[in-house]
Length: 392
Image (cartoon, rainbow, N blue to C red):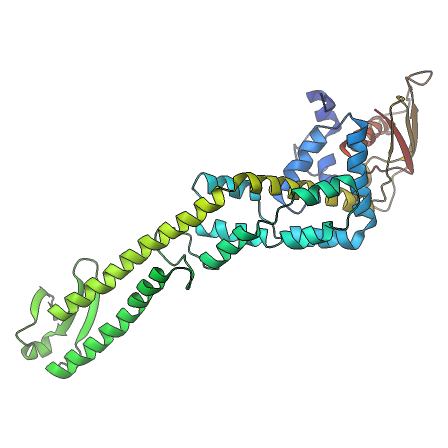
């Protein structure tokens, strides 16, 4: 009951969201109006175009917001600049809630939230009712932004269960295990040096594979120098592989630390993700506010760029358009070649106009132009005309 009913033939012939022949966005009304910066804004604008309003108060509210953003070009462009790096919060919160978000999704979430305080600051001085509402609805979610900033590495791996996710300083146990893992390499190097000196085997090496773990490798030319406490593990064509108790102990410490660290990092990542998921309603509310703001800044930008005017809205059933232009056709042809036209219709003596002329004279364009101007006004957009008084 809040929206104008548009049947499928009307949507198709007016080419609201796609062209009649190629089914492409380019050449449709949405193509002209969509200068949004976020995926959420693009979806919301499409919804607005497909569901024009029929309540005068709601339409005027949207027009007030677009007018204020059109007149404040500097603030508008700043908002658009801040919205540019914002990811699709609606999709991200869906992934987080269904526990399919990976560490990079959380970083995308955090970088998006980091833009919101600046946007909110610009909105603070806006005076139209709708922009004030958006200001109230826009929750910067600073504690979630801070949580991800403290916990997750800035460039984490895609895999969730292979470690390298949690930042240093976030969790003491992670720091301790990480130290054991990194210092393990130094311990192995020291043991290798010590064994070389003790046995006199110059090319003795400590190596690792997944089957045997860590082992000492001695080439056949030094086989005679191998001491008794070396336990043979494997014989190769040109070398022998051995283990010693000290190396076994080191292996347990290093590999144990690695496994524990990976498991703990995954556990902490899940905790962070669940904490974000618990605030799903706040995030969705903010995402909707960002989407609406994106739509109105886009409509204001298009109005400014294409010389659109603010339509008056009446409930007398009068459509009075002076110097109206087809929004898509004038964008498709260059050098301002489009010839503007007037339209006057009402519920009395001017209910019907008969248009005559040869093929390709512009009869259909003129009819569609009138319909699109009325529809744009009911969406809450400025319209391509010198002046327009639209009856709903």
